[in-house]
Length: 258
Image (tube, rainbow, N blue to C red; front, top):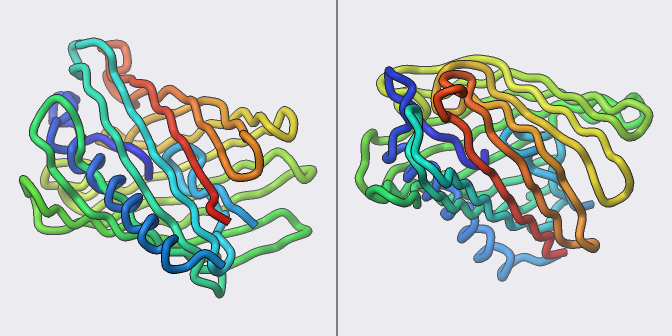
């Protein structure tokens, strides 16, 4: 997931959660870089913006992504911040991919470095019928300024492609205590929408339901720059306190090594 943020009981975003998410993304990115150096053997899109897709890398394929979140001004619900989350994903074969995120690098505020190994398994690929389904898990392991010992984000995701272009998705998630809400588990729905305009530009959106640190609706644009580079430009709007400033920019850069 790309840059989730915790909120407290009043809906204010916790700097420690920002840091946690940021470090997790960095961890994924670093692991992917190391793995790519060791194992360069279809390219896939790992998330729309935050919600996972049903795409899975082929065996030996390596994908790197850097997510940049930024809120340029203070508001009642969220202070200004910037966050950088690197992630790395490698195709393991048998419709499975694994990766790592490095979260928790958020400024201003103390870093809360968190390493987040990830795994995703495509359990169904209907090919011509347009249906696909995955199950996945992200494990959160705080290593600096720890607010908890470990956490998890587990999900099931299904997507349907219409006319070989428009794709919609729906699924369910479980976040363990302290990952997106202090001292509480969170469950809910996750949804995606993708509509290609041409071979290079796609309109897209995703949404996590619920009032917690991952509860955002994110619309935006995905654009291809050549065969290896993908850019993402979006804006995340909170499910709670949006009118009080709980929203921010989310930009992403993706690179397929092979």
